[in-house]
Each structure stands twice: as structure tokens, then as C-alpha cells.
Image (cartoon, rainbow, N blue to C red; front, side, top):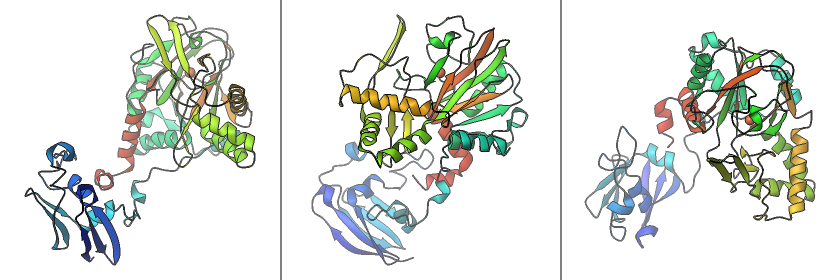
Length: 401
Ligand SMILES: [Fe+2]
């Protein structure tokens, strides 16, 4: 590789830059960026991979974002005015280049797998081909089984783990394999309930529950949920699930051809909806900052919040006509309850069903008889961190941050 300095400008602190030619291509780095990301031992901790120098508090931004630049032994060297010296290898510069931000060294090796959306037909074919959702509790410690559990949850939004002992202990063990149990006012560990209305929530009855995500009245909604049916001697109580990532695709396709659906898409992705939990006087929760569908800059689903039982009566923060908001919610509701978009199956003792609470809606049909269900809420960040560690070598990942 070859590296040379082609331009160097000292204007004012935040405008100073150096232009480099690396392998015949020009890249620009601001000196404020180089100072902030200096990798020498005084500035960066080798083991924690954290900054040791706080550029905003430890550096004089008026004078210390300036220095002499040179190439020494194929590395960019900046000798700052305060005496500090920074060195940057060509590899580091190419990996971190932002002007232009082309990926010189492909980061494919640290890409998470693509998400795969599904409706009923796709779901049935996945189940029928026998290759998916067959994780066995007996082989939980097998690295390939463990990785597959994470991969299926990430890609499809759910998975099944079979042959699990019908116990709270085994449910806890599987929960803790996947992530960290998120404590709530309902329970601090694995929850375990029958239809005794022990908590003032419809979940603690035998009534049917419509499609929903849990915890919409919280800022920190549970990332994943895990269900394990321990006992049922009656009928009903089947689970229905729907992939909202798929439903979003359908809405976007309609929006591309129909202005009214474009407005529906705008409302679902931009209009904050208020949810509340008010059944217990000491546990009242209200959250009103998020739309039903949070999407990223590419239009992909980040998080769905939906539960018409918990939806507040308040419409004071309506950015769109209220009747259009109702039309959008009605259209969304119709799609998630369309038989082509959801699947229905019974839970069974010994099979754990775990799903992405930000992506997959769940519902329950009414039931009779005695029914005991246990499960857990799991944190999303820890699930992602563990999946990352299963997918990539630490060095691979560190090279990309
Ligand atoms: Fe729920």
C-alpha cells in the first residue's frame, strides 16, 4: 500500500483537515476526528477499548486541534501542539474513512444475517420443510444448536425449543441462555400464572386477547418474550402470531400506489400513540412518545407498539386528523388479523416458544379448564450482544467499531 499527504489545511479548530492518497484514492480526515480517535496508549485503553482522553474536556479545542502531519514508515503521524503524537496505520484509515465513506475493506464478515419476513404460507413451508425451529433442549450446550436458536429468533422473529422439562427451573435455564430476564412489577424472574386475575390485567383471565405487543406503556419494552405452557386440561388458549415486518412490507407496497395508503403509512410511522397500564394504583405507567411502527432510515421496522386494550383515550397529540388515525389503525388491525398474515397453533408442555416482542405480535384465543403458563421477558441488548459473540470473533468486531 502507498500513502501520501496531498493536502493539509489549517483554518480554524473544527475545519482543519488532512487529505491523503491511499492506494491512489483520496480521503479526507478532519484533525478533530483524528485527535478524538487517537489510538496511542495514552489516548485509548487497549483492553477496554475506551477513550482515555476526553477531547471536549482534556484538550484545548482552540489550539490543540492543530499539529504537524507527516508520513513515517507508511503511517500517518500527527504531532500535536501540546506534545501528543498520534499514529494511524493505512488499514485503520481505510477502515474508518468517512470522506468518502466507501467500504474499502468489506465488512461483510461483521454483518448480521438478513431478516426473513413471513406470512402464513411462508411460515407453513418453513415448518413443513423440517429444517427450522427444531432446537432440542437436550443439545442446548451444543454451540451449533445455541447459535441456531439465536439466528432463528433474529431472522424470523421467533423459535421453538423442544423436549424441555415441564418446569419453572428449565424455563429459567432456557431464558438465561438467550438473555437476561427483565424484571417488572409483574414478576422479577420467570412469571407463572393461572387465570386468577392475580394482577389486574386481561392476561390473568381466560378471555381471548387480541394481537398485541407487550409493555407499550413502558419506555423499555421487553425485547423478547418466552412462553412455556406447564399445564392445561381444557380447550382453547391457542397462540396466534403475526410478523409485523411482513405487514409493513404490505403497507409500503400499497402506499407506493395509493395516496391514502401513503397517509396510513405516515400515520403508523409518525403519529405517537399513547398507551397506559392503570390497573394497580401503585403501578401506573404511561408512554406516549412512539408511533405504532418505528422504522429506520431505510424504512425497515425497528419496533412495533400495538395493544388496543392498553391504548389511551387521549388524542391530544394528534398530528393528523383523528378520523385518519382511526382509518390507519383500522387498516393495520385488518392486516394483522388477516388469515394470510397470521398463524395459529397450540402451545404444548415441553415446548418453549420464544419471540421478538418488537416485531412479532401475539394473541391468545379464549380457553376453559385449568391452565398454567410460565415465561419471561428478556432484554433485547443482551440477546443481541450474545448473538454478536456467537457470530463474530472479537477481533473481527473490534475492527469495525
Ligand atoms: Fe402479551
